[in-house]
Length: 149
Image 1 (cartoon, rainbow, N blue to C red):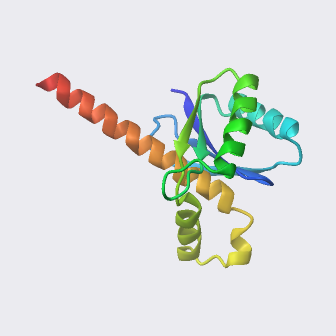
Image 2: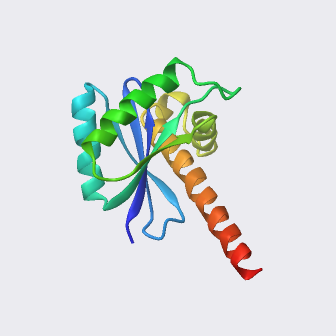
């Protein structure tokens, strides 16, 4: 079975996470330095091939109120660049509080704020991806329940 990849897109770094082949668990993968959009997209395209990815999830940073602000607009524009360059479906996924959750996870692991800078983007991508995977499992379960009736 193919994997799902998630991205936590920032201005300078992009966190990457991938699912297991059964699409149950997300794991942080790496962090891409976003020196230029072109080089970042090329690296993403290479990872999609390398990790046997069939769907790409991009964290969509809505505000807590649900509004689409400047950061969300920038992520959406970058997602369109990625979508034009890859051969897999791309979906924007609400990422509210993913970085806060990632920081909490890393703090619980005993990492200082300084140490977290190296991995927080990838862990945040894993939080986004796990949320997506969990939602897909719930959707699948609900559809199976409907079929049983």
